[in-house]
Length: 311
Image (cartoon, rainbow, N blue to C red; front, side, top):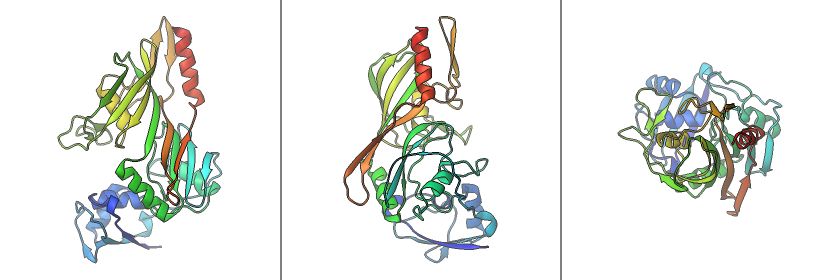
């Protein structure tokens, strides 16, 4: 069955390419959305546009989506730790190894499949496969995430992220011994020219990206860091730390350091050692500041034990 969808662009969303914007809203891939635009299936204020059109605030977008392009979020009884929920938001502790929403190669078993079962109604924005998703964590990154259960809450959270008032703290274990105790990385990030699936700091027109870090503990061949984000670019922490020569351990994309040898003892890293420990924001309805935290997951705790015992 064909579906029609009407979307009004909000102020914080203005400036995005329409194919990227609509891919994020619908769960349809960017390449599929480009084909839909070329076929005339997308109208902006009643007029067809090109795929590189940049959306403006208050643009009214009408989509005609063929049945084969739509997806349906299937509720699945997957265990997930819910830290907080009300009729506006749900805050979860995402485990490592879990994809946030369905995409190519990951049609089931995602966080959104779990929330559709445990929570039920979520925001309609971003439907059908990522309703209410205002930010995400990579598959192998664990920790705190917030999802909007109400459309008004969605737009409020999007604006908070846009204004950079959201507080985020990560814990990560990186390769090597960082000499300084604190530091800031301010290198623009953009899509890699050699590999479009990767991000890079070696780009001509990257987006502003700021990462601040502090050393928590040193292990000689590895360093435990607290990281705070000034911006929220794709793979930002992983890309920035890799650019310093200290990639996140276990990161097979930007570092490939999955094992270390300390005094003839091997310590392996089952996934990228990155955990979203804290998330703070204003409640979308009351404005009250809320802060949620998550302890290090078991796999990271075990790795730290091994590192300490090997010293």
